[in-house]
Image 1 (cartoon, rainbow, N blue to C red):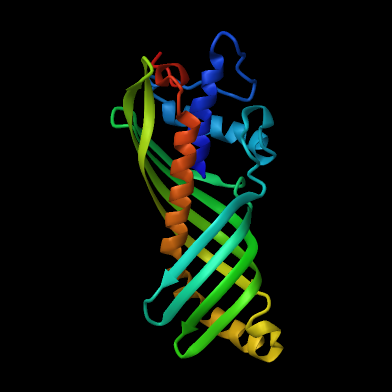
Image 2: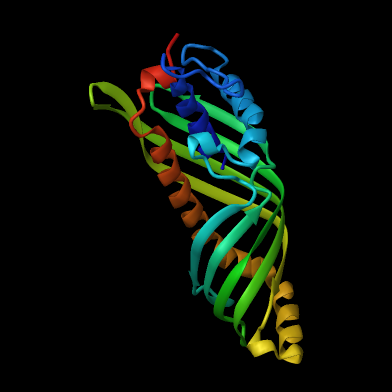
Length: 248
């Protein structure tokens, strides 16, 4: 999420073209600044209040909540066998984070970022068919997941290309690793609403939630990386790199 905001900060500086005035909430950072990482960090932090509700004039959607159409999870490692579809997902708390690290290699167009989210809440629709040890888990309905102490480490890589007579940055890869402190998961309508079975399965899930999240995390990380890489390239598409991120 931080790298999405970082790309947004860099691209919004492009509003400094003569026909448009730079909004007061945009801070310009220069590549030659020896403290450019600090400048970008402060720019992102300053921009957060604007992003919570979105910036309609720039077609930037709200981060509260963040919408994800679908996450598909397939995990076959012992002790869990997990197949789940999460749809119409809303993520609350995406705009509330602390930056723990930021390192830039401007010559190689590489951005390394660490972030920590104190709490995130996911809700939406689920369809699950899984097995923990010998216990089957089946159901379709609404879900809620409360997640605490989320630590994210990301690396975004790009290259400078020539396009329409100017230089642009195009991002080629996004590596994202997540660690979760703890979480609680609530699934409605397990086994078609059978309360006895639902209670028993909920207990099994919480007793084995470490294994469950380890099976699901690679798919969550992959989906997050896919969304953020696409967003980063949409933000910077068509923008003159030397205007949005000037050297001096």
